[in-house]
Length: 85
Image (tube, rainbow, N blue to C red):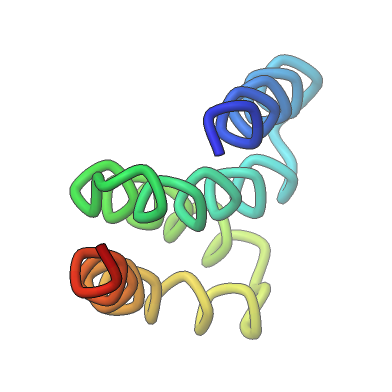
């Protein structure tokens, strides 16, 4: 999982460096999906929230719906992981 997070963060940095497009909005969602697996729902929620304005700007409704559901999903996944241990 740490490797997945590292790749996701690198992709996010690259997308931010290239230009101001929708890519960072989607790229924030990737680490958001990994953080709960690493036990950090707060980081996941933060990444999801950072994606909101970008996805809103580009009117990416489906990605925005997914991002808005993200904080709750991250909390649920973290709780499920804790129970599994």
